[in-house]
Length: 116
Image (tube, rainbow, N blue to C red; front, top):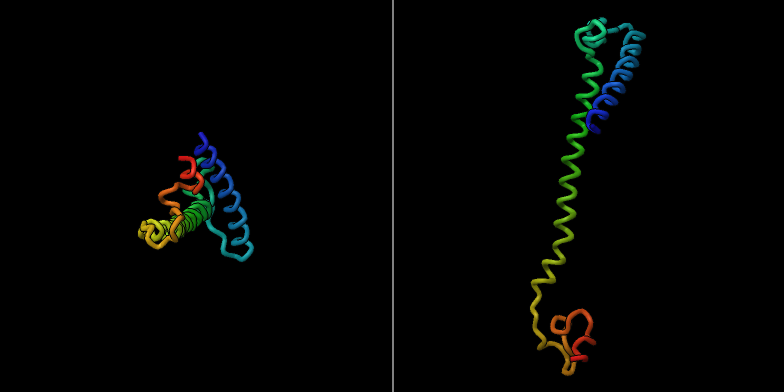
């Protein structure tokens, strides 16, 4: 239902923009024939300016979505790199001073091992 509402709203806005565009072309002396500025219900063939506006905006949205997906993938990759690096570190306690425990063996809180 929501997609139907979006479709009707898009058609109405594109028709409005088409009217402004056709008025601007007519003011410059390059008006389109009425057959190309009215929809089939209004006695024309196709509302060419409205269809053009919708196709141009659709192309811009497709480009934007692709770029957004690429940026999102890059950010996810960049945020996973530190996790991969930290998980690849050796889990040796030989470098720790005597009397201390590593967080890997003690859990997140070192005091957990004192209770055992």
